[in-house]
Length: 201
Image 1 (spheres, helix red, strand yellow):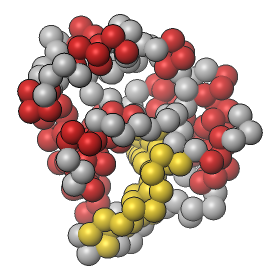
Image 2 (cartoon, rainbow, N blue to C red):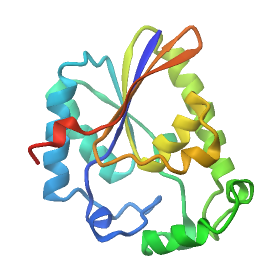
Image 3 (cartoon, rainbow, N blue to C red):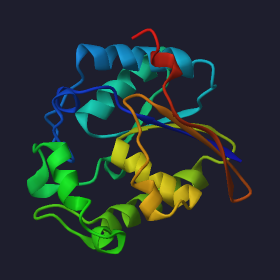
C-alpha cells in the first residue's frame, strides 16, 4: 500500500495575471501563495508524510521548501514533475490559449504539439514512467508530491483511469490536496482538490 498526496504549488504572479507558465521558470509565489503554502504545511502535519518530492520549477520548489521546513523533511527534486512544456504559448493569456485548444477533439488534442513544446501524449508517457518508479520505491509510505495543475490532471487520468475528455474538466486550485490510497494495484480516492485549509486566507 502507498498513500499518494498530490499538492499543487501556491499562487504565483502569473496565476494571478492569467498567464500560461508551462516550463517557464519566471513565475514566483505571491504573498498569498506563501500564505497558502504555510496553511497547507499545517494541514500536512496531521497526515504523517514520510517522503517529499517536488518539481524543480521555482514555484513548486518554493512551496515545497515552506512545507518541508514545517514537516522537517528533505525534498527530492525531479524534472519529471515539472509542468508540461507549452512552447510558444508560455507567457500568453491562458484563457485565450485554451479557447483555441477546446476547438479540437480529444484525440487530436492528445497529439497536438505546440511549437517548441511537447504533446499531451509525450507528457503523459514521461509521467507514467516516473510514477511507476516512485510507487515501486515507496511501498508502505505516505508520499507527498508538490507539482503543477496540469501534472496532477494528467496523473489523475493515469492513476484513476478517468477518460481524457473528462480529465479536461478537472480543476486543481493552488495548494489543493488530492490524496489517493493505492492498495494491491487498486486506487481508492480519499480527497480531490481539497482546499479546506485555505478558508481563512
